[in-house]
Structure formats: C-alpha cells, structure tokens
Image (cartoon, rainbow, N blue to C red):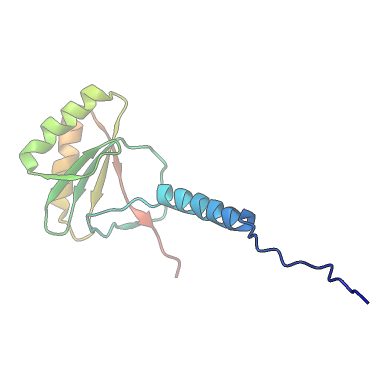
Length: 138
C-alpha cells in the first residue's frame, strides 16, 4: 500500500500582520508627537476658575528667578533682559498686528514685575492675556 501524505509544510511567512502593527505604531507616534509640546521653562502658573481660549501669538514668560523669556508664534522661548521686551513686542506687532501677548508668570513672581509687563502692553496698545492653570477641585 502506498499511502501518500497530503499535507506539506509551507516554509513561507506572511508579513501582512507585522506591517499592520508597524503601521499602527507609526500612526500612534505621529499623533502623540504633535500633541506633546515640551516646555523648557519651569513655572507654576496661578490657578483660575475661568479659562479663556485666545490664541496668543507672542509669549512673555517670567520664571521664579525673575528671568524673562519671549517667543513669537511657535518659536522656542529665548531669554532676554527686561529692556529688550518692548522692542521685541513692537517687532512682533509689525509682523502680526492682530496678535495677543500671553503673560506666563510663576505664582511666586512679585506683583510689580507683572505690572511692568502690563504697562508695556498698555503703552503700546497690545492685547494681553494672563496665562493660568485650571483650578483644582477640592
């Protein structure tokens, strides 16, 4: 009797499932990288009940050590002296007349430092937004 085996072992490997997994990982990392915006300046914003959704184009940041940082649009913040803030904001205004200036100040910054920035904005008729973090529920 000559019995013959009908099943043969196939040595090929299907990469279809592997490419699906790689494609999903690629989508995940692309989406998560656009959501995460690193902030190199460590500040603790004061809390507020009401949050506004203005889209500021220019940022002025004051950290706990009273260092000033500025940025226009999506550019990275750079450290400047207080005397350089007014020319920077005026230059930004010439680029974008509809700009908002967002002030990010650490909650430990003295009030007079914040008022200095507000005075610059008032003298030049800039629209200001004070950045805060949402109030935590107790």
